[in-house]
Length: 141
Image (tube, helix red, strand yellow):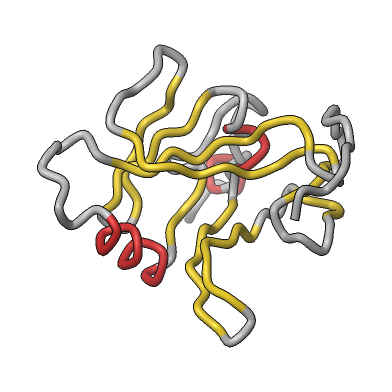
């Protein structure tokens, strides 16, 4: 007979500051497009830098660029075969996000599906969070 006291377990909660192993993921399309854009590169450190800056029409703006050098405050991880560089200030703003590459009649480009965003602008590159500290400014799109 199993003792009920020992059979029950209390779930262990993760501390609020703990981040997942990969704060964001790249879809197959995004990873394929990044590999296509960097196919001539020979540097093994080549990766995608994803960053958030204050500004844009909703308070924060996404940025992405090809990167080959880590900064001291970077979190570096791999998702879908692509190395990603993410600075420590951007991590909490993108946790759980997915970066995709969309090619349609309306245009082509990388997009971000961010569960932390509670609002954004029609331009698609600007967002705000519930705790947003970003300062809205004119949209440049």
